[in-house]
Image (cartoon, chains in turn blue, red):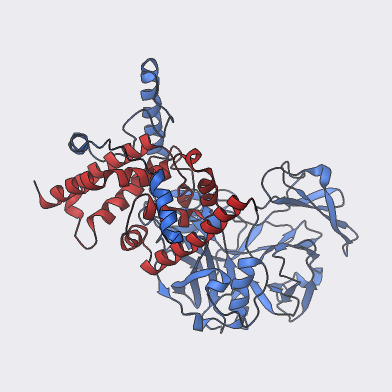
Length: 412
Length: 159
């Protein structure tokens, strides 16, 4: 007997042989009532075990309430219509991948760049790559990984590299809890709120449009979703509070406030951190004389960690992000007098190169995978502002890029 | 009685335990799995006009059954879409080593393993049910076999 046959036999021995089928009951159920989302009996998954008759009325009431809540709470987003095939598209041959793309895929897989000889999709944990849409010179890719998860990538059609930005959100997207994966670029100007540079991302079935919500709640810059993606190159230049996903009736199905990078209104260290084990990661003085300190501590739950950043004694940013496969997440945060680059990278990133519109560059080295650096005041005015964050490995190879101004990204 | 109704009845009578056992790995309870099977075939009967015969009838009913099982979750609205794919042996105490080894597999591979061995579905039907290629099913099963054998051997030798 082969090993596979032995395994099959082992499973077979565990199978329940009891035949408690009842076709007449199926017929009765089929003809008794229309299709329903509600479990038909007050036992099983809802309650885990059969209820005593004395509790039957309570159980029915709970079931009824759950049914009502289900109907009222269910967004009209048909996410379950295609279980594993949310995105369809054109297969991408591995021959189209540039050396930089291989390094990005490898870094997303194990956090380490691949050797140039390792050019097998499975070797970098990838099952297939699909091009699902192209908009305004930007291509949208879905990467099916061999571990069952998906990554999502953006890339310029004009570039010889496929991927300019890759995000691996894990199983949270697509879901009813998170029907969009927003990859927009953001900028914080001194004294104002968060401004969006480009509204872009992926959307689950059932999301018809994505829009921005202003600080006063006004929804604007409605952008249609087609082929599960959305793109608006230059949304209204107003402080933004949230990204809103709209269903086919125009109602908000999801409001994403966390899509916007940390704003400098934070006070207090994360409650989720084991602060007794906090560790100082870096400390430096800004040009205005303030001291910026970055701390990390283990998260109380899970395997992640928390970080917080202080100017003087005032916390300005904090978070406990879950472990991620992303090569780099980064954004700008300002308190008015000081503007900081704040980001997190994978272990493969040795340097983050900040490119400015006037050609200047700034190199920042991650410490404990955190990137915190002051953006010089001279680089905050129009024509001098940051345009790209480029993550590089120890050899200077580009692993990922975040583009802040797409019109200047053609040299990617 | 239509041909599809007759075929559904024949399928139900012939394959009931495979449906229930396969679904029990997703519902983690034979009672709940039985309910899902009953509801799934009832839905199939109500929707038989939409079966176009482009694939196997069993794969079509399995797709209905997976969606039904998904809806039966107590937190169907809140949990991430793919989080419900957390298949496990319905009675892990009967083979703890295998139950532990299975947990080492990603949920999607576990689902494919259970569809193959608990539901006794051929690879072509698994591919149709899951919306993936037959090659992916074969590769997933091969990888799962390798992982399971390593884990089981490790458990046996205590390494």
